[in-house]
Length: 359
Image 1 (cartoon, one colour):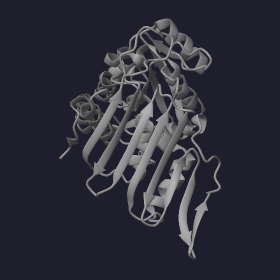
Image 2 (tube, helix red, strand yellow; image 1 turned 90 degrees about the horizontal axis):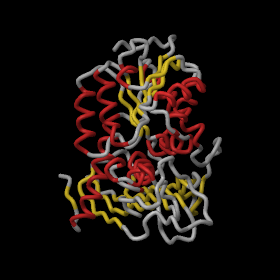
Image 3 (cartoon, helix red, strand yellow; image 1 turned 180 degrees about the vertical axis):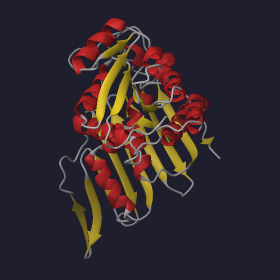
Image 4 (cartoon, one colour; image 1 turned 90 degrees about the vertical axis):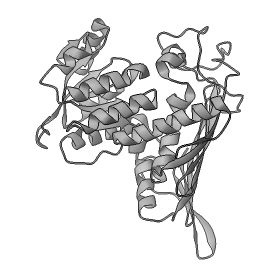
């Protein structure tokens, strides 16, 4: 695959035509360096309808047809988790640059195979850790990289929903690979790990609970439900928690849930160093000390929290510019692999009831 010249738009195909694909398509449509070419979905009618909506001239009922299209330079893989590896590998082997939605794969074996194939081909492979691209995260990363917080030795990551199981394929372990840990926990886990400097994990102790199911009987709280929602089907955990220890002595605490008897939904990511600390979510604030006083610093940025539109716009811009050779990927494939390594270790620890060594 030749790298598109910076002056030439990157010609884009999107595999999948569901809700996450539509967000990618909107961002590509608005990106000045992108040119939408095609959408592929196993439902050919839906592929055509979505392609027409976003101005892509071609639509395919088989992703292999999209991958055979020589007019396409790069693809987003926006399918169910069980086919992330299949289509990412097929796209790489077809010479396309690839942005694959998170998690990069259901299992570590699948993730490692993507990495192996990627290393054998001269293409960009990026994982869809969209929250990394938000202004609050990138600003805080600058503070961390400049040493303002010192050595990061502790982090906390939490994403709690009280009644948030989407059902359908999200609730099917064979398809999704897991529940809230792989769906929403992965976001906050990744943010904390990324801000810590992506250290090597040495041990993981995890727990999962299967107590509340999808809480389909709760009718007073609206929630997102996928098209194939079935209240009688649920094979994923309600919640998960973990303590992860790293080679440099740092520790990360994680919890996440679809269903929990909590007083509110919440998201929280914080990191703590020997010179300062910070909350990334629910809103960016930095803690430090000055002249004998503890102080909180609030960077003046467009938004202190993650916003979907700007986040995806920045993610797509970074991917496209990386394909053009103008930028470095904020979320390279190997980061996706390492996060899956952590996720799999959490599930294994919970199943076996013991700490899992990663060394």
